[in-house]
Amino acid sequence: MVPAARRLVSGGKCAYIAAMLNDSIRPSLAPFAAVVFDMDGTLIDTEPYWMAEEGEMVARAGGTWTQEDAVELVGNSLLRSAEIILARTPVTGTPEQVVDTLLTGVVARTRESMPWRPGARELLSECAHLGVPCALVTMSWAPLANVLLEALPPDAFSVVVTGDQVAHGKPSPDPYLLAAERLGLDPRTCLALEDSPTGVHSATAAGVPTIGIPHVVPIPDLPGMVKVPDLAGRTLQDLADLAATLR
Image (cartoon, rainbow, N blue to C red; front, side, top):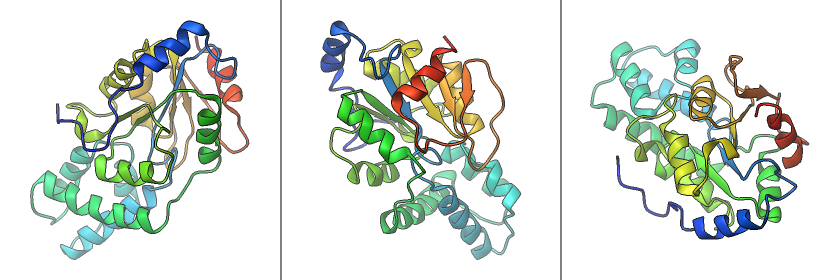
């Protein structure tokens, strides 16, 4: 496993969470104990940024990158996406070098304009107001996750898991299992929010009841998941009530 990146919290609030849960699960989230958010496409709409950087990289190398190619990478680990680019285009270098170039471009675009998804910021604010523990589970690496963290209050996320912290990214269950472990919770007591096929497969494989929010690509129907079109106007209790039918 890659060492945890600078600034990322790895579970320092577990004692606080355990104490809170010993009192009672807050009615605003019952029967769940924490919310686990995906980032790209769920909280912020960075997928167009990734696609633009991929296209520019391939064009500089003299190749062609189609919309279909770009869509295929949605939700993958960054190293897997880099391997696909190297296999299909004239781009050269190592997967790590490809990731570094893409990540630098996406970080710059995100710093210039934070592209919030409808209802996402409001839901995070509600979680903070109610004291509901939250985790971030993203296949983006720490530099991009940190851009989001810097735009939020310091305690917005009790736990952050990024793609450079896990040996096996989504659709493996490992990222969600790690988040639940750091939260000190059974995965079945968490509620996941995901927008991609790889993301919902990862969360449901870990046993986390999941809300699927299709965005750039369709999400398959899976046991352990219920879909909503977006988060706009939806409260935490709305989502918990939907997901409670999965348990």
